[in-house]
Length: 261
Ligand SMILES: Cn1c(SCC(=O)Nc2ccccc2)nc2c(=O)[nH]c(N)nc21
Image (cartoon, helix red, strand yellow):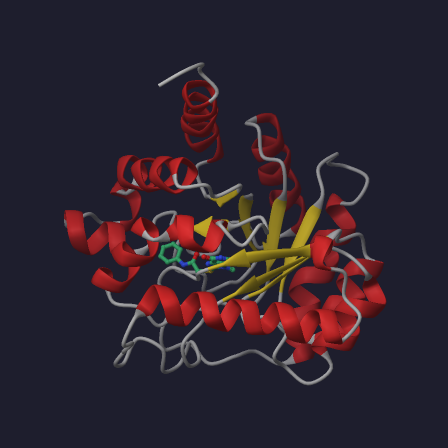
């Protein structure tokens, strides 16, 4: 899942691709590099960030989805928690919903059901504004798995088909580095519930803090974590550096498919 940030303040790449034409060029490059999905997000979810209005998010995301639709052959996911943005985004060509709030906003379950597109349900403790103040868990893996299974129940109760759901532990969303490490090590417990698991670790602060690497120096660490997530059963890897991440995933798949051992 290639990351296409259309947030002016997206701190991971400083919102370099805000214009629709730069976005299209970046999306085409990620598709050429092997991305199976392009994730388009208009609201920065960095720690401490406040949300944006529906209109602001729409003005960022819809023009880009319209520019990409029909120009790239891979499905587009819209990274949003707002029902109105979900509906407009699917109308504009999005084929997946990537919701960091796991459809908890009012109207989100109904929107996802009406739209009947695949949905990624992600765990977050608190909100982007507060989540990193003091993340705390008794058993982080158990609590994240339990939350996600509860969201699956809620989605099915709302009429969303189970086969349209993906689960995501939400690395960095209300987690300390030990929490993130425990979640990555414990990923097989989430994978074991039979739904595809998505992992987003690319360039995140976990890499920066453990390795002491600035944002632009996190490629090797990101590929290492993508490799670990894939070995632990993640089926979708959300990444900035698509070419390098695809190489790693292809090699993991090759080795894991080997006979014997
Ligand atoms: C939209 N979105 C994000 S944005 C946060 C981010 O990339 N931060 C970040 C990026 C680069 C550097 C530092 C932080 N992370 C996920 C994720 O892990 N899973 C799913 N499903 N969606 C996600």
